[in-house]
View 1 (tube, rainbow, N blue to C red):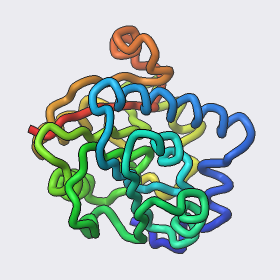
View 2: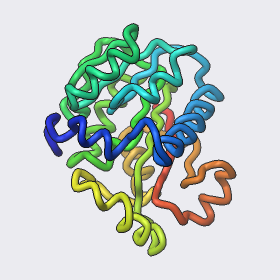
View 3: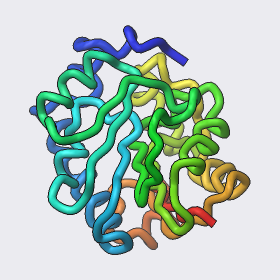
Amino acid sequence: MASGETYSEEYYRFSRPEAGAKGVVDKVRDGYIRRQILRRVPRGRLLDVGCGLGLFLETMAGEFELYGIDLSPYAVERAARRLPAAVLRVGSLTDGLPFEEMFDVVTAINIFEHLDDPAAGLDAVRARLRVGGLLVAHLPTIGNRVQARLYSGSYAADPTHVYRPSGREFSALAAQHGFSCVSSSFAPFVGAALWRALPWHPAFLGVYRVV
């Protein structure tokens, strides 16, 4: 796994810009994730693992107490300016979550693909989620030739992507570590049943409950 210095200002300009086409796509995705959460958990404590610049946390500010963790000191400093009431820490998911609180929701948007040991990451999340709490995981996956082709033309440009499962493989790993899948789909997510049947895009979204 890369160090915190890898995720510098230059990295965030590349990976999660606040403007431009990718910024628009990220906002649409984050809005969809917000709706998925609020359908199931209307309020409580929410922890965003890999909170980055705080863009997703900002969308949840009305209903939840906000917490975030990121490997990048640069990102945490920017997120703290954006969300002064949030509790934010610099740290790594695979080292465990440096919070005493139990959470109602944990989000991990484009995080698991960066982990050398995704199983340890799932265990760390489960340790801080209440029974019945939600894990929402978004990550690029490779489950067929079309997804592999699209992955090679986009996500593969990021050398920090070291975990490249299929969506089914990630859900199976989550099940082995105490999570039950509530829903899953591939981009564009809306009309989930269709995109489960025709998984053409690498972007996978899974919603899981602690069991």
